[in-house]
Image (cartoon, rainbow, N blue to C red; front, side, top):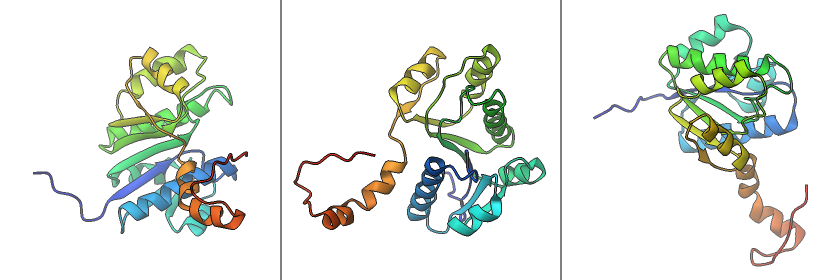
Length: 195
């Protein structure tokens, strides 16, 4: 029987610390849910602004580009969570996808299990990017995507994944009852939310 580690350490990689509202909301929900699910969990976030991330979320954080710090974090972690957001794409810049693939590859080499968490995959236009994505995404233990297009794209690469929703919806779920009361609707009313 496998022993469960007394202290679980997770490293989270994504587009964090850049002040992008959507990505920061994903991180907030992810950290909150991990702490709820696993009290006492040790979380390290790879961030552009580690001091800000640590202060805002009460987690350890290191500079995402400082591999002298990133590698020891991955070596001592039980798991890398890569996501959410649209990390594996090559339309916002040719190097973005390689950064995230390198982090996943490093985690695997260092014996750290990897979860691809609720990502939007693609578009991936460059041939080299497709080849590397196809090879490296065979390594993670568990893969979830947030949309049907990503699921279908991974199928074209012969990579199985599961369809889930964007993690930000978890954040909305917790506040649903409170918000319903504030705007005067019951849980049985039909309503539409527009963002």
